Image 1: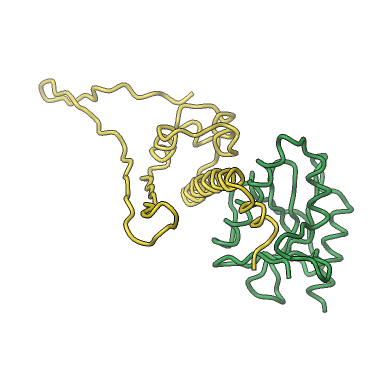
Image 2: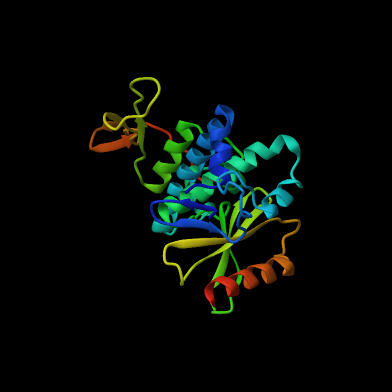
Length: 130
Length: 134
């Protein structure tokens, strides 16, 4: 049994597209909140770790500011987590089929070091928290 | 019966379609009233947000973000009722103890201010009594 919201979604491709967008935003932000809760991190702490303002993080998490993949990667780095994205592959153009899917891992950037004598220095500048 | 079935929860509406109406297309009157407060251009986006959030709730059994979900007032049994949030529209409801795995949506409302309206609390409690104390 479905409801009027399902009916509205299926009424037009435009509606279905909007729901798909909002579902992705909901799923991503819920996953971030889950990671924040598990780590005991607040929005303020997350903003500090990202070198951003709390307002900016709020906008990302409430969906009013579009989140780029780079921003998602930065959030995950700040949380010490590795994002995992899957895209179901549509095969015959009309129906979704179970089967192949591709996993794309977005890891943290590798650090580069320089050695001078007995001392090792990081050769990259880290952003400091605001 | 007007109900959305998910893998973890079924979302059931206290407002039910009249006899003879198609329950899959019938819209609860409180939804229509709440949506009428929203500018025409924003209605599709907010409808999509509500559809997405109730789908996620039905699939996972919970919503964590305070932008999607809020703990609202108290029920007569000491438990809380909650709100699914989409912009200024709220879907007030509770996790049923009588019907396991069901989240009842009491009604939808357009939230004007910060404070939870007394009329909304009364409506949720009346619906809760009708369903849980039967």
